[in-house]
Amino acid sequence: MITYVQVLYLYQVTCSVELTRGEESALKGEQGEIMEMAHRILVATGEATDAEKLVPIEWTHLSGVNYNTIGDAGEEFLSSISKGARVKVKTTLNPMGFDIDNVSNYSLDENFISKQLSIKGSYETMGVTPSFSCIPYEIFDIPKNDTQVAFAESNAAIHANSYDNLKTNKESAFSALASAITGKSPYSSLRMEDSPNLAIQMKVNNPNELTYGMLGFFAGKVAKDSSVNISGLGKMDTRQRKSMCGGMGTSGTCAKFLFGEGKPGIEKIDFDEKQAQDTYDELNTAEKGDIITLGSPQLGLEEISDLTGRLKGRSFEKRCMIFTPRTVKEQARRIGYIDELERAGCEILADCCTCLTPLINKDNVDAVTTNSIKGAFYLKNSNGVDVNLRSLSQIVEGETK
Amino acid sequence: MKKILVGGSVKGSILKTEMPINFLGTVEKKTGVISDKNHELFKISIRGSILLFPSGIGSSVGAYTIYSIKSNNSAPLAMICKKADLTVATGCALANIPLVIISEEEFSSYKTGEEVSLDTRAKKIIKII
Image 1 (spheres, rainbow over the protein chains, first blue to last red):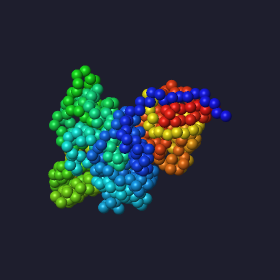
Image 2 (cartoon, chains in turn yellow, purple):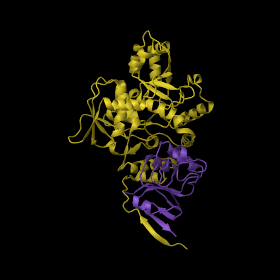
Image 3 (cartoon, rainbow over the protein chains, first blue to last red):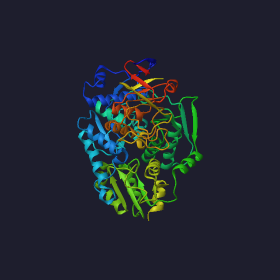
Image 4 (cartoon, rainbow over the protein chains, first blue to last red):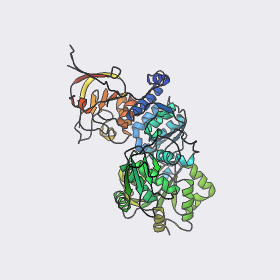
């Protein structure tokens, strides 16, 4: 015998995501299990982010590739869905755990390698371009202004919104995958007009890429909206721009810089010497490193060229790992940069990145020297090693002869 | 504010905690048992329950864990939270586990062990005695 004592109606359900008839049918499972799941992900993400509809996107960039981060559960999931799922739009891919060409130089176990190759195979089966890069904005042509895309890698989403005139949410690995399969993404705040309620003023003199990375890290912590105004930046080079985007992606959810002081009357926060020092003290935990890593985000051809110039006639006295996309490594080899860098003692790794690399761990390394704020955060928190933060100029000056 | 993130219709018994859950690393994938000794639900399995918790926390990779516990038949029947977070939202979407968001007030009206029926299409939760 059942008695109903209380009925709780979800009356005020703010059902916000309006679906088309085709989307409704997919969500009901009428277009197969994969489309049903992909639509469930888009609707759940859309409801959680107050999106009112789904919009077509032209390019997705997926995270969730490195076995070190997605583990067995991720590997099994991808293997299972790759049997039926195919991407509908241009889809590029974040770095994985190693460079197959030199993986034997690092102590990585067989299980890691085979699971990573399984993940790689699953993405390729689904029709994904195996770019293994966190800088899609540097190695692919940028579509016309205001094109809707779906980028899961945080530094790439911020770069795309701030510098490339594209529009993307800061997607999760799952919403980006669902977008790749459906060609659609929730129409959330970042795709609409921006109205940030915070402006950050850069007040540090003579900034280098570390300063800009720390500024980004600071911005990610204080900016609660999806975008933030930023002023006083001065002229920045590629390295500094990437560092700032990487920094903000690491510490927060904000996914767009708007350059300027913003609307009158909004809250203003300074980033001065004190904030810079506090951020440095939070992330720098060692006076020196056992090895050096460069590339988080991965280095593009411009930075590889610049580094080659700086190392003319000099050599590193420690191991120096350099992370770059495979396409850049190949271009750099043809130009002759790779020979030069290897002569200077560098190890050049394609397809992977400092960030969440399984190639560095606390059993073989106590501390790492890097100029990457994003790298520093993950080396410390995921790899469990100490970090010595220095700018590239300081690293070349202090570590080469 | 109340939301339906993943739809569905289930009947079952409430398992409630006031502590957020980090699905990555604190839930055993094979059994659904909470393995974090600092958690209120330590050693308790979330399998087959209607799980009430404030929200998910931690890495978005936790969504794969939700998919895994479902694949191992160790998942809750449904989840009910106070706050929508993307990890639990996508995890439940992957695994096809109904997920709704309810108000603070409604949240406090439930106790562990109560039998309820949840139906997102009718937009209602019914307590059963």
